[in-house]
Image 1 (spheres, rainbow, N blue to C red):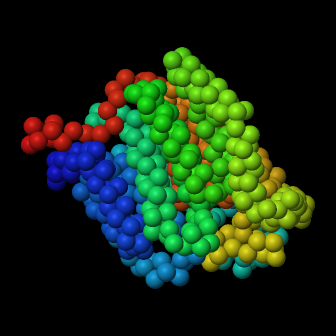
Image 2 (cartoon, one colour; image 1 turned 180 degrees about the vertical axis):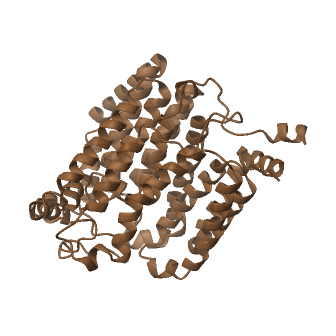
Image 3 (cartoon, rainbow, N blue to C red; image 1 turned 90 degrees about the vertical axis):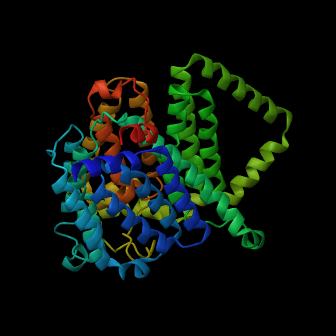
Length: 459
């Protein structure tokens, strides 16, 4: 049985299998069958857990599912009826853990996860009503960001370990790259499938912020491969940002631009030839703008459209009032905050079913929801994460750090890291990769996938 699971893993770790998964996800989007797609992919991941000894085979199906399900807005009532089916993936995971005997490990970033878990669990103590603290939505986020994320850390740390089949970091970046192109496809398919509606009402994408967040996770991957493989990969990095622009997400366009500049600086620091190419491109771009004043007018019109032609965007939007509310909530319970289950700000922002009462900004969320304990916990976690990234300024460490920068930036204007799945779980995975031994992070082996040719030779 173990030999069969090993052989199945070799097949599923191959590039053709990954591309097949992407093709299946593309078909789901084109057929507008996202709900059925979730069920199909969850069942597929369950099979992979049972028949493969390497859990990384589930990474790409997981990423693809998290992306196409973004189109199922306000669908709590749609998916809750399938809750009993959760026994299938849970059972498959338990079976995998029993079959794949490995010790649970603890790394440096664990302590930040644990500190945040304590702050989230204590959030709202002594002020939050009992019914609000123990509401299903509140318990989901308290559990997901608290003890659940601690469990996720140990599980991911146990499973995502160096392999003699491939370079682990190289593989994760390759899967991010594939998932990024699936994001490009989602935008192209939107313009194709909803062309007539776009002609009538313009570009209106409810899932723009979430897709932008995923793309910001993936954006550093092409820049990493531009340094380790071919310089032409850098074009994919720009394409990923253009995909974010196409969503018309204000936060994505702004924060994505910052991340793009960081990625450009990244490759310029490590590759002198690319540095010269990028400097020439920037100079040419500046000359085009200088010679075509209408270009600035187009940018201004785009800005007005993104800000809904509002001259006072800060004071007119809920986020401005939520910033003020976060300080009021802090003062009402300066030690533990009001908690993630607090519902007192629904006059400013009313969430959909199953969502928390977000402040939609990371710092106000920490201040208002978790108080002084939360500020200390998240501050400690941030310090530990930054220390891990800059322990040695290698290409792989910096690239993983840029993926973290993407989610950190988007978390300043969206829930971001306060969503346990997928955003915080992926963030935790990034730092588990940064905990790998230095010899793995400096590994010269560039293989990200197994070879079907080699498999046939040994079968």
